[in-house]
Length: 475
Image (tube, rainbow, N blue to C red; front, side):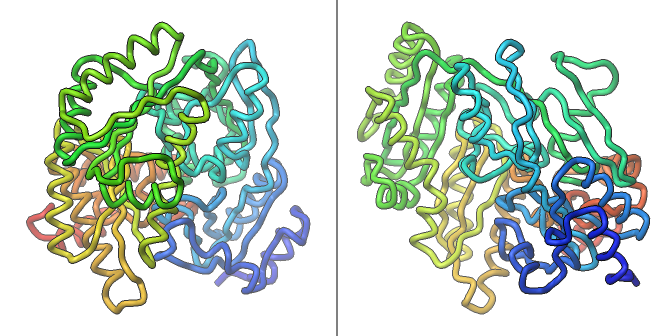
C-alpha cells in the first residue's frame, strides 16, 4: 500500500506544492481524456514545470513503485491518457516553451506542452510551418502528437508525426534523461525515434521534441466535389491516387457529416450530396494550376453533383473550416458520439463504408463518416445517447466490429489515435501471440516494472487468450 501522505510530501519537495494536486475536486478534470466513456480518478496529479522536475518525479515514483501516466492536453481519443487509480497523473501542460526556431536547418525545438498550431505560428515569420495538422491542432500538444503518431488532413503528402520529428529528450521510468535522434535525417544506431513515436507513453516521458519545418507553399487551392453516393466518391479517391496524383490533403465526408458541418460552419458545402471530397494541391502557381486541372478531370468522370474550386486564401480556409469543425458539428446533432479510428487499403474504401452502413442498421445507431480518404484512415462517428441503458455498451460493440472489419479488409485497428485502453481488446484481431510477445519484450526493456501507463496499448498474453475466447471465430 502506497504511503500517500509521504508521497505527496516528497513530490512537493521537488515541484511547487500548488502543482501537486491531492484533493478530489481538483483531480476530477483529469479523470479522462477526449474519450470520456472511460474514466478513472488518479491518486495524485503532478504538474512539473521543467524536464528536471519530470525526472525527479519519475525517480520518486520509481522508488515507491507507483504507476505514472503522462498526459498532454487531454484531447486524445483512445483513453490513452486515462489515469491509474493508484498512480500519479503526470501533466505536461506547463512545459510549453518553444526553445528555438532554426530557419536554416528548418527545425523547431519545443517542449511537449506546446500546441501543434503554435509551432506553425512561431515559424510563419520565416516562411515555414509544421506539416502534421490534426483537427484538434489548436489544442493538442506536440508531446501527445508524438505519443500517438498523430496525422491530420495534410499527412497524405507530408507524412505523419513519425516522418516529421528528428530528435527528442525522454525521461525513463527510473528518472534518467535520454537524448534520442539528432539534427541529421538519419542518426547513428537504432532508430529509437521511430520506436518512441506512437508508443503511447509506454516507454518513457517526452520532455523535448525537435521537429522538421517545411517551406510555406507559394500557392494552395482546394477542390470540393459533392457526389450522390459514397461509392462514387470512394472510386474517385482510388482513381486520383491511381493516376499518381498526390494531393496535400484528400478528405471525405458522408451526407450526415456534410449537413452537420454546413449547419455549423457555413462552409458552402452541397447539402444535397451523400458524399463530399476535399482535395487540396499545393506548390508553385504553375504546379497547382496543372494539378487542379487533373483533379477536376478525375472528379468529373464520376458525375459529381457540384464542384467548387477555391479562388482565394479566405475561400480555401472556409472550405477547410467545415472539415476541421466536423467533430464538434456532429456533437450538435447527438447527445454523444464515439469516434473510431481504423485504417484500410484505399481499394477497399467503398466496400468498408458499405459494411459500416450494414453494421449501422444492425445496431440501430447512426454513423457520420469523416476521414482521411487519401491514406485510408477512417473516423466513423457513432451517434448514441449514454443516458439510455445499454446504449454505450452497444456502441462499444459496434465500434469493435468496425475495427475488425478494417483488419479483415487488410487494414489495421488504428491510424493516429492509438490503441490506449479503447482498442486493446482488438489487438489480437491484428497481431499473433508471437508479435504481441515481442511488443511486451520491448516494453520490458524500457520499463521492467510496467509502471508507465499500465494497462494500455499492448495486452498481456493471458488477456489475448481471454479476448479470443470471448470473441470466438471473429479472431
